[in-house]
Image 1 (tube, rainbow, N blue to C red):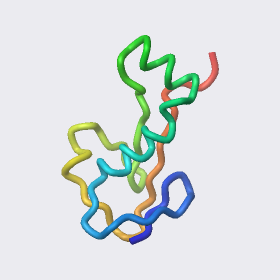
Image 2: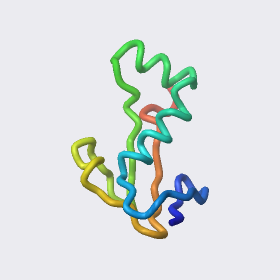
Image 3: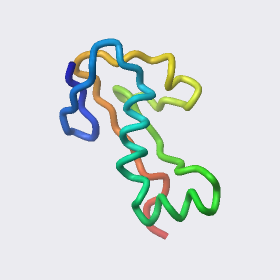
Image 4: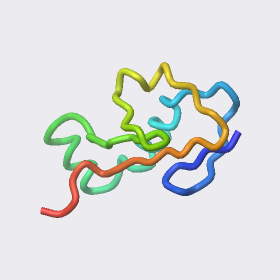
Length: 81
């Protein structure tokens, strides 16, 4: 099934959970300097995830099942100085 992650189509097997998207995004961004600095200073990356226009909090990651055509976006926690 296809979902969009920041406007790019990605395939996931039917029944996939939102937590799988979180894992994919965090894995792909973990080497970015800003993310590395945040993890070193705070212990977390602070990436914000949005599913179909609604902010998703960490406790919901495992309970949300992906659906065909879901629009998922992630946002860096800080922009600028």
